[in-house]
Image (cartoon, rainbow over the protein chains, first blue to last red):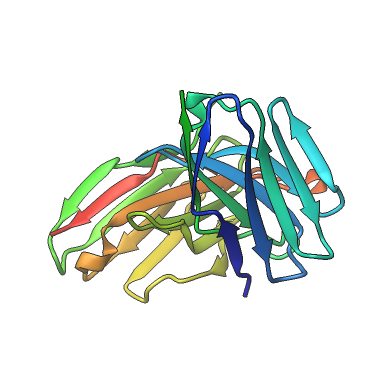
Length: 113
Length: 115
């Protein structure tokens, strides 16, 4: 089955700095890569996603890049704000075969004001 | 916009008891997924349903069963509860538009505590 690894497990940045979180996946059949933000005790919230036919996608301060050859994808957050502090999960799935998500271990992002 | 609804939000049970968790997907979403998230862990896929039929099975114990009903809501039945079953249980739903793929939207979760 799919295995997703995520680094770093914790990330502390100063407000206004950029944050980068990286994930690798093992199953070359995976074709959908969402990122979720989760605050303590709350639901995972989809913040951005990318499909395997796209190399990069951007939404305001958030961008995701995908390297299919290397089987890795990254989340980039620019101009970080204290409210960006949360746990971020990457995930992978095969949308042609059930679409069940396999999550990375999560990154706790702390943005210091 | 309507979101995924889960009930109850909190549930306390004793060991060996049973529990039933309910999930109401976003209207017109036909696929439901169940995930279990232990403290400090990532969500783990349990089981999914598409058009009222079981679609895929993940790391769901034999003590657990689930189904999707004609109105697309789903129930996760958990029997012989163990302390290790204490976790957040999330339901997610996704829409039927396969032409563009389908994102999963999570409900607020049910926090199950087994004592």
